[in-house]
Length: 308
Ligand code: TUI
Image 1 (cartoon, rainbow, N blue to C red):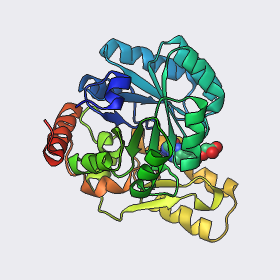
Image 2 (cartoon, helix red, strand yellow; image 1 turned 120 degrees about the vertical axis):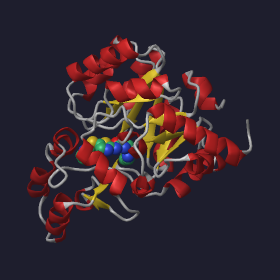
Image 3 (cartoon, rainbow, N blue to C red; image 1 turned 90 degrees about the horizontal axis):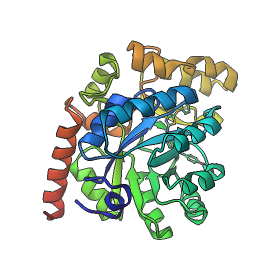
Image 4 (cartoon, helix red, strand yellow; image 1 turned 135 degrees about the vertical axis):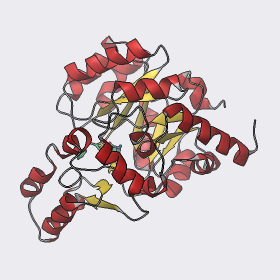
């Protein structure tokens, strides 16, 4: 399927894998890109040297385009921005902030840049700053989120900018893909579905929690200090929300989340770990390869959109 995004990024299918911290490492990234989508390394809170290594390992597994996501709250974001240029990465996405200060260097290096935006205001600012596309991410997403839903955000961003829009948040099958296209998107970004890909190195316990999740099993922590994070409800979220309701200061809450994503992804700690996942987890019932997922989504979407 050809869209402005497949043309821009040189990929076969308009499906982009979310740049999830700890989860989106080189095995998953290469598998998505090899399957014709766009794999994205999630730099998360990792050091720049680790990100460089991930880029090099991805290049060993695929010759197809792939990207890096820069989580802008990372204290090493400046160094990571340089590594991306030095390593000749073709696509950059950003999250959790405004990437304005890096754009000149990335554009000078010919990198395609698509920041995640959670509002029309930031989308317009990013277009003026010269980015190639924006990812409009709704509050259905896992991890750090904004407040607008995908259904409301995507068409409003599409109307406000002339660059291509990628829809994210709550999309995990061909129906969601087709709906995003109807809203005016040129591609989708999916996170949660790729967490349970066969090629994903995420601990089996975490995958089982996603596969067993029901529609209302996610919870948003961090609303009181401005960093809302969606994750599957567990002991940690119950404790966190209890403390938040009691008016606990950020420092007291922070000790619950420090290293908690690693605990979930690497150690499989589903009790005290952060099981980041989107609201669509309830629909995801099967572990598949990235190629199987992408084929299934495209077949379903093409039949719904009546294109061939
Ligand atoms: O970034 C994400 N999702 C993430 S990052 C992350 S790592 C983390 N771990 C614990 C606590 C906090 C983060 C886990 N998941 N998605 C992209 C995204 N960006 N969602 C929302 C935004 C966003 C929000 C506000 C982007 C820009 C923004 O405003 C920027 C500004 O300065 O105006």
